[in-house]
Structures are given as C-alpha cells and as structure tokens.
Amino acid sequence: MEVAGEKGRVCVTGAGGYVGSWLVKLLLSNGYKVHGTVRDLSDEKNAHLRKFEKASENLQLFKADVLHYDTLKAAFAGCEGVFHVASPVPATKVLDPELELITPAVNGTLNVLQACLEMKIKRVIVVSSIAAVLLNPHWPLDKLKDEKCWSSKEFCRKIEVTILIIRAFVSISFLVK
Ligand SMILES: NC(=O)c1ccc[n+]([C@@H]2O[C@H](COP(=O)([O-])OP(=O)(O)OC[C@H]3O[C@@H](n4cnc5c(N)ncnc54)[C@H](OP(=O)(O)O)[C@@H]3O)[C@@H](O)[C@H]2O)c1
Image (cartoon, rainbow, N blue to C red):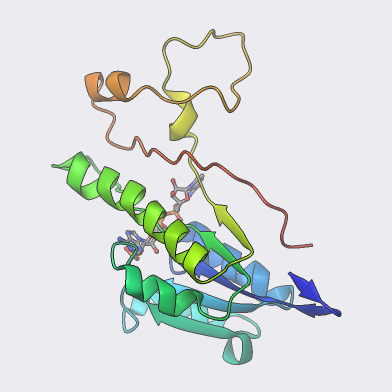
C-alpha cells in the first residue's frame, strides 16, 4: 500500500458506523487517502467524518449501498485497498432476518468482493464478527476456535439468534503501520 514513501488510497465501506469511523480516523492520521462510503451523504450522523484531522484534504465520501453494485465500483475507483465494514447491525430483534440481515451481509460482501476484483483492488479486508464462530454447540468447550469453527445456522435459527452473520472471509490485516 506504500509506494516510494507515499501512502496509498483506500476505501472504507460503512464509514459512518462505529468501526468504520474509527478506521477512517486511523487511516487519515496515518497519511492514507481515504474513500468512505455512506448511504446518505446529507445525514447528520455522518458529519463527524468531515471533522477528522486531514479529512478536508484526504477524505472523499461516496454514496454507496452494498446491494447496489455500481455504487461500490465508483467508490473503489483509484483505490489499492478496501476495508469492507458495512453490514446491518440491528440494536433490536428484526422481523425478517433473512431479508434484513443475511441478504445484505452475504450479497453485500459478494458484491464488494466482485467489485474489488473488477476494479483490480490489491488487498481486501473483510471485517467479520464473533457471531460467525461463537454459536457452534458441537465445538468442544476446551478446544480453541479456529478457521474450522463456524456458527451453526440451524442452531442460530433454533435459538432465534438474529445477528448470525455469515462472513466466511474472515480476515485481519495490518495495513496501518
Ligand atoms: N462494534 C463492534 O464492537 C464490532 C466488533 C466486531 C465486529 N464488528 C463488526 O463490524 C461491522 C460494523 O459494525 P459497527 O459496530 O460499526 O456497526 P454500525 O455502527 O451499525 O455500522 C454499520 C455500518 O454499515 C452500514 N450499512 C448497513 N447496511 C448497509 C448497506 N446495505 N449498504 C451500505 N452500508 C450499509 C451502516 O450505514 P448506515 O449508517 O447508512 O445504516 C453503517 O455505517 C459489523 O459487521 C460488525 O459485526 C463490530
């Protein structure tokens, strides 16, 4: 991500959210040029992003929805790296988990990965959740959870866990040095 001492340009999806905001702030303070995606550019809840140090020169916000492929491509243009953070994180129980959670999480992630491929992004970091591995009743309690341990869809449906997010591409990257 660094060419001849210059930090690259990266995109953060869900820039206005909790994790996304901290990430944007960190990237800006480390000298990266940042594209941030939000769903509503005029929403006051995203106003804090423009107040970050170096935001005026190095932050560009894009209106994008992970379910709208072309909006992602526009936001990724010119970037070397993408941090995919955007995902529905409901505070309360949702009525239709399949529609409100699973579809945006899974199809949104697939859209992001496909757009990254098309836009020739060099590195993609997908933020996952502990929910992806925690809810597996068959995993021995004394065994460390690793890439072989995934939450059981059947178990989650049974106990009505609506925050099951299937993000199979768990990845942590140390892009920020
Ligand atoms: N918070 C934590 O401690 C934590 C820990 C581990 C993992 N995570 C994971 O990190 C991710 C983000 O969590 P968070 O706590 O930052 O949640 P958050 O504050 O609710 O942020 C979620 C972001 O995703 C965006 N988003 C939702 N649906 C979208 C869509 N269809 N298209 C584009 N953007 C969409 C939201 O945009 P709008 O504002 O427009 O709704 C918001 O910016 C989740 O996958 C979560 O599981 C969080």
